[in-house]
Image (cartoon, rainbow, N blue to C red; front, side, top):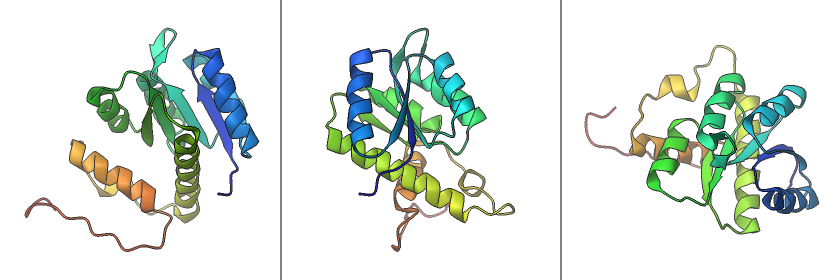
Length: 174
């Protein structure tokens, strides 16, 4: 796995930050850390971040709020939400707000590496193929249901691969 890219890790647990930074840095990623939303925004303004990995629980805010802020300011930067509070509501809300994916804590480092690698590759592939007059995915497919969010997630996973994809649905759904 060819690892490169700038990853911003946002978590208020300094031990977790050190672990993730050490793991990602060892594997070729340039890392930046923040313990709150304000610091994350300040870093993103200075650096060209390829990916944000944020915890759900942060001081004075949460990862969902951070996703909303970054979606507005940096719409093409993928965001992975990590959480130790694994509920369907949090996961669904994260995807609805525009997160690339989410990881439930505790997760393994190989799981993190794979997701980070795939998110950055997908982001780079999208930016390479994006054309000024081409409508974005969000303009082409409309929907907010859990099912369509899963479709968006799968599109992101296979977007940069040479594969045939079949999307099926009930008659009359488009």
